[in-house]
Structure formats: C-alpha cells, structure tokens
Length: 232
Ligand SMILES: [Zn+2]
Image 1 (cartoon, rainbow, N blue to C red):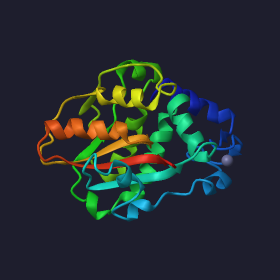
Image 2 (image 1 turned 120 degrees about the horizontal axis):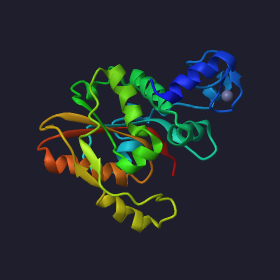
Image 3 (image 1 turned 60 degrees about the horizontal axis):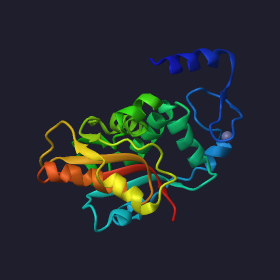
C-alpha cells in the first residue's frame, strides 16, 4: 500500500469521502462520485459499432482490430475532473477503478476474445518520478484485472522528456511525439494487444506507439481502449 493510500484510509476514519465531481460528501469510500455526478458521466457507447469515434481518429494511420472509449471528454465536465485527479492529484486508484468499470463493459466483446495483454502508453521515467505512477498503467491494470489478461508496462519506452506540451504548436507537438517511443521488452509476434491511454485527442501518441510495436513484432494485432475521447 502506498503512503498516499494509507493516509486516505486513515483520513476516511475521520472525514467522509468526497465526490470527485462536486467535492460534496458521499456515502461509501469505494465510490468515486455522488449519484448526481454519476448521472453527468454518460458512457460513450460508440464502440458497439466497428467504425466509431476511436477507430475514425486512427483511420489510415494504424490498422485496428477494435477501438473503444469509455467516456467523451469535454472541458468543465465530471469526466475532465476525474482525469485531472488521476493525472495531477495523485489518484492512481481513480484510474484503476475506471479501468475496472470499463473492463466490465468490454468483457465478452468478441473482437477481444483472443486478447493477449494490455500495453499502456508509456510516460518518461522523469515524469513517472514526478507523478509517482503512470496513469495509463493504472487504467490498464484495472482493465486487465477484469478482462483476465496481463499488463505489459515495459513493452514500450518513452525516450524524450520535453516538459509540458500544452504550449507548443500542433506541428511541433507532432514532431515531438514521432520520435518519442522506443521498443521495450517482450515478444508479441502474432499476438493481439490492447493499447491503453487516458485521453485520445489527435491520435498522434497512439499512432506512434502502435507503429513502434508493429515495426518490431511481425503480425502483431492492435486494439485501442482509452478512458475518454476528446470531442471535436
Ligand atoms: Zn458529485
């Protein structure tokens, strides 16, 4: 148990759990959201169609067996607050919990029947030190737990560390992402892997991650699951 988790456990003895959406007290410490905020987090079900918001965004760049997003991402929504807590407020448990929920929805999907394992999009080790964990790995762990497949957090490696990308121009960002990934460990020839990330925006990150795997492992088959797809 991490110190943060231990402290939360201790704190919950004296203080009620707070809803991550509206910060009001809620019953039950295993819940993330109050009933009202839960209703404001409508699941994205477009993955029920073979061609959907996720596969569309990677179309022509990465061949996919299956693509899915758990939620739609918009500014100022409950979904954004959950992902903010996951990334910036030391809450890997939020990623694992949402990953498990997503896994329950994806269990039994035929396209994933032969899934070999899950590859989280890597972050640079310096970022990992700052944050204490990789948020994509937390989501992957939750998903893998429910789907009954292992997570391969070292299948890919992030080479470059360039600080925040948010202030850079789109082209420059794309160039940065292109050279960012290197192959890690594992032999995945002919395997079916699920690439996992927190938010899908342009698709550049997943595109280059997927291609790094494809170049190295002949006939690897790829699917994608993201917590949220940013609305355009
Ligand atoms: Zn709430």
